Image (cartoon, rainbow, N blue to C red; front, side, top):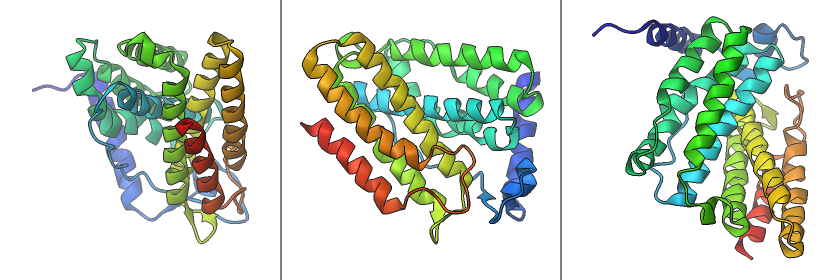
Length: 264
């Protein structure tokens, strides 16, 4: 079977980064032309799947992580860091989409893995192209369309979405734990995973606060937003310094606060 041009470009990009990952670790200074006191190492190893989405909220959780990857990848592209951005356009299609495909098929919803493949290829071949930005926006729109397959009473429910957001912060704390070694950020792709997940949560909270004006809902969402801000502070720098802003224990404590709020 002949590969399409897009698939061929994606394969070239994947092979290139696989070679890089198998070679000696690349320092952040080498990859981004930055001079840092302590090099941060980049690995593009595949992340493990969370498993097939079991129900509506589970689907939203996995879809949120996928969107979080795209958000942080886009942030890195805008910061002119394409080498750091590319893994976050590869993970969705190779690790996370498989968790969603059965749910989408059962709902008879349009698949969007083709868009993810094309976007990764575009980022690899022409990260600065306006066409790549257009494709990014189109892919995000497809993600948001997939979200509409979940019943409205679930995706627009404050308690349900708070639980999804709490689980996402918990997942972000796990990624942060994978990023740090001996108190330093050694695996920057995991650090960026964590940051991207929190960006997705912030986006969802903003939507909920705009659409749920009830005093009780606003109070709950404000409390949750305060907890989220603690986690966001830890991974606020797009390029982390030699000493991270928080320990793994501190991040996990914040995640526990979020989970506690979601249980009430």
